Every structure is written in structure tokens, then in C-alpha cells.
Image (cartoon, rainbow, N blue to C red; front, side, top):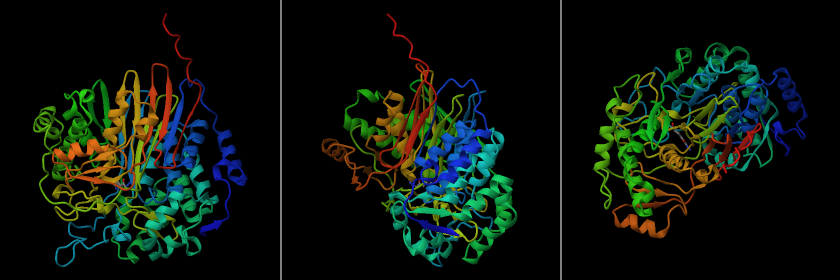
Length: 579
Ligand code: DON
């Protein structure tokens, strides 16, 4: 039975009242002996302490960063069901230390083969409110199960049965409900209530569970177990696939068994750019993140950022964001299906031309009108470094909190509502206020454009691994985090710093509470900017900094969330100071 509720107890992975899971974990740890000769420290940081612990366990059991990434992704699917999961997708940016190979595993959802450009428009050509957000018609074909199996097979060294074990235990034995779960469930209570399977799983007894109640997800444990035993085919073919398709179609969705059968992850070459001595490795299409970061960093390269006063600096960053996000809206979409002028967009000459148009005294108005922007509250990021130097930055999503709010009965799989990331109609904004063009229009089998931006920054003396959720604001957050990280700021400061954002349309700067002083805000207004003061903070950055000189690894989990980081293994003794 799904969603059973028990009174408050210790988290499943920490022992305490949960002896059985601890025993199972000890057994599987003992079966996998740690490899010798690991000199460096390893680190895991994620948005949930139990997911971090799952990654640490798998590393300690002899897994590498890629096995740990499988473990953390799957654990997040259980303990952060509002953010990501088997019914969603994501991007896993990998660095393999042995040969320096870097790749982005694209496990992004695809539009079903029966999808069409106007599937969310009514008979008057207007977007039907909610149709791309709630219920199974909003769901793209999930990519996460295929991505996890792919990562385990091609990059990991442990079988899926081991790397998925922590998630299976967390789903079967349960985890304690936290305040974020409750807040997200409140936000999405209506769609969750509307679907009996989702209500049974996430609102046991018909209520949002109390803090500390143990939430079990037996159907999800079974689905994870099937994947652990038989790999991705257990999800994309056979009984589970049939259940997914039947459930979706019974409630007005358009999935077919062929959609699941045909789903394939794609290995993409990351977008690399150079900035102030760093090599910045970003996400490739269908994420817009790497391209926008490359454009923004290239536009900024020749400005003496450190020498600018605070108003000039924010103004410059905003103008750079505006220009890059304008290109997102105009040109970007799934490059497997549409032509994207990538060489042009990434050419330094183009970025320099854009940068020259920036007027340091005046805001450049964005063309077009203002639209409402939803707050990004869900999605998730984690970062991992193992003692061999393998790295993972991964951002995963089911889009809105609790995705479409629809669980395919008997599978425990909560479906995404990532279809809303397409441009539903040219010029009409999506949930994050993003507009798009034909490049991101819906088409059968197409991947919807994303902002998710798992990123590495590398220099001989420092490596930064970062990313965050936050919808359209992900890319500007990663830009600000990178600039701080490249400056040498400590990890904890980078994730804590106040944030501001501009995305071309709506034409305004969104500012976190307290991020900019009144003086800076009025300076910006005098230059023609409109300011929107946000009532709540945003983002949930999970960051690792590896200072190579003294082999010191630090993690930082955004204070806006409940995540945690762990560093373990002996650091090399610091070099004696020279006389
Ligand atoms: O792929 C994207 O860009 C969005 N689906 C991400 C959504 C997100 O980050 C929500 N919020 N925090």
C-alpha cells in the first residue's frame, strides 16, 4: 500500500528506530569493498540530507561518483517527490578523471508522438489554462529511468541493485515528512486530490502528512526494484510501461507504448567557454543553460567587473542577462529537430557586438509586453566529487511542484508536467514567464527547451561544481554563483549571496529580499530599470569547491533549502609555508 503514515521516527538511513534498513545497507556495504589508493576527499551535496547520505553510502561501498549520482538521483525521487523523479528527467554533467572525458547525459523528457503544436489551444486559439500543468496531458515521456541505467552501465562500477538500494529502502520503509514537503503539498493540493493514486501516495488518510510522519511509497519501491533487477527496460517495456500508458490514456493523456519503447537518452557534448582563466563547462541543448552562460560570460569578459561600483555592476549584469535571454526566446529549441544557429550564437564576435550595445547609463528596453512569472520552487540539483576526481553536476526536474500531480496507478510514478516548458503559442509566456518562438514549439518526439544548468568551472588551482533549481532564474543564478566562485569566494558565501534576475521579458529586475541596497535599487531605477521586489527568496544551490593546491574540498548547500553536504576521506596535509 502506498502512502501509509506512521508516527514520527528517525530517518530511514540514520538507524534509530529504523533498524532493518540499516542492516540491509550494512550488508550491501560489506559486499562491496572500498577500492584502495584513494587519496583525495570525496564530497556529495544535495537538496535533501537523506539523498546526500545515499550518495555517501554508495561511495563508501566502493562506487564512483557516477554510481553515487544514480543513488542520489533515485533517493531524491523518493524523499523530494515534489522536485524530480522517475516520472521526470534531467541533465547529468559528467567528468571522468581517468581520461578527462566530459559529457552531458540528456535524460530530458520528450513530447509524445501524438503531440502537436496546438495541443493546448482551445477553439479560439487561446492557451487552455492549466492544461499543460495539471494531469497526464501535461506529461512528457520520462527520461530519468533511462538516464540512471545508462550512467550505471557506461560510467559506474556498481550494479543498479546496489546503487538503487538506498532509494528502495527509503521508498519501502519511508522517510520523515519535512516542512518543504508540506509546503509543496499545500501548493499542489488541488491536483493531488484530484487524482486518487496521487492522493493515496502523497496525502495519506486524505491529509497532508504532519512533519515527522513517515511516508512510505510501496509501489514506487516495487518500480525501483524492477529497474534495479532488469534495468531501464523494466520501465519502458512490459508491465510497468503498459500501466503507465493505460493510466495516462484513461485520464485524457496521449502516451503510447511506442513512446516509452522509443525513448533514448542522448550523450551531448557540453558547451565550453573560457573566462578569466577558467574553463566553464555547461549544459548543451535542449538546455539553454550552457549557451546563455557562454554568451553572458563572453559579453562580460572585457569589463573590469571588480572595479565597477555596485550600481554599474548590477546594471551591467542585468543588461547581459537581458541580451542572452532574448536569444533564448528567439533561437533556442531542440537542435535534433530544429535548426539553431549555434556557431553564430557562441561566436565571440557576436557576443562582443552584443556587449558593445550596452549603455552603461541606460537600461535597454526589451521589446514586447510584460507577463506574469511563476516562482521556481521545485526541481533539484546535486553535485558529487569522488576521490579519483570524477565529478557529477546534475539538475533534475518534474517541472512544477509535484509535477502534473498525476500518479500512474500501481506504479508509484508521479508524472512530470514538463510539456509546459515548450512554447505553447508564439509570444505567450509559460509558467516561468518565458516566451519562445517556433524553435521551441511542440512537435512529436521533441525535447522541450530547459533552463537547467549543471556546470563545472575549472582552473589549475580550483574546481567548482554547481547548479540549482529555479525555473528561468536558474541560468542567472548560476552566472552569479560562477562569478563569485571564480573570484575565490568560500562555498558557503557563494550559495548564500542575495540574487537578482532579468530574463528579457518581462522587462524588470527581480530582486530577492535584501539582495540589493535601497541605494543600488534607486540607482538602477534612475537608469530606467523597473524593479520587482520579491517577497520570498528563490533557488537551492548545491555546490562543491575543490581547491587543488591544498587538496581541500568544501561543500555548501543553499541556506534557503534543507539540503546538506558531506565531505569525507583524509585531506592531504597542507604544504608547509615557504620561509
Ligand atoms: O527545465 C526547466 O527549465 C524547468 N522545468 C525547471 C523547473 C524548475 O527549476 C522549477 N523550480 N524551481
